Length: 280
View 1 (cartoon, helix red, strand yellow):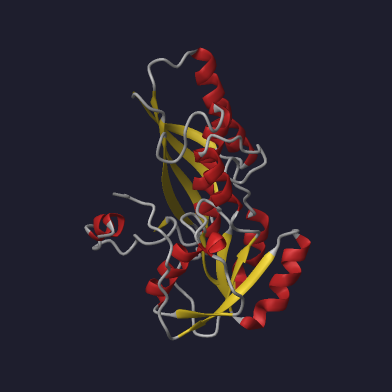
View 2 (view 1 turned 60 degrees about the vertical axis):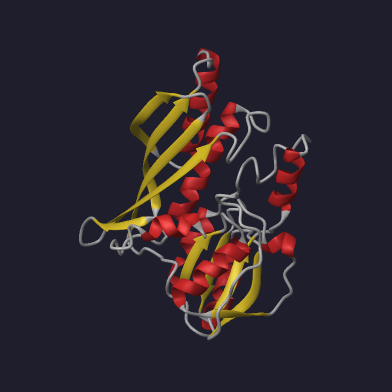
């Protein structure tokens, strides 16, 4: 049983659930997007892998990624942090500096939240964003092109290194996800659906298949290392082939690598990656 899916289904009466963020109409032109993510010690990271500043930065970036792929601009953040009792002032400042650095970079105001005492460092963040034209996971039609940005696979390799006690480069996307907001906002009017690759390309394609009632005809062979690498936070998106040249042009302008790998068809898709949520 997929416990994550089963639990989410308990709230199926809400039509808002099911995307990277929840879109709430705010005014005739603006809509609010709420996205929330947890980043827990010994689940998403170990203290030996990253500095406190890096941990705080990544916890913010993975949440901002959800807002970007909804074509929303982050405005505010609410932080809930469970702090181990042995943390001293220096450690608290290091943690806070990570949150503040990313907030400043993306012009986000941290407006509150909560702190509690806990044996482990656990972080939960809610980002409030605005958009004029939200992009959802739904919207893919037959013959639409599927594409993802950047390269996939390195995060899985770096996670395996970390689990073996090896040092990971500070430049690794596992430490600091690389987001491309300017590129995505530029192509937003040309794409039909989007999401970020958080659980792995295979997982995300299966979600898109189910939501859009489509499958995929792969134009390139994709290795298991690429298909099953999670926490990449590259952008997975679809578009009508008539927009291909414009999207390629914008990718070149923003120095973003495009990987066109499939077209949508009438079949179903199911990944063969190992489940990593709620493992027995």
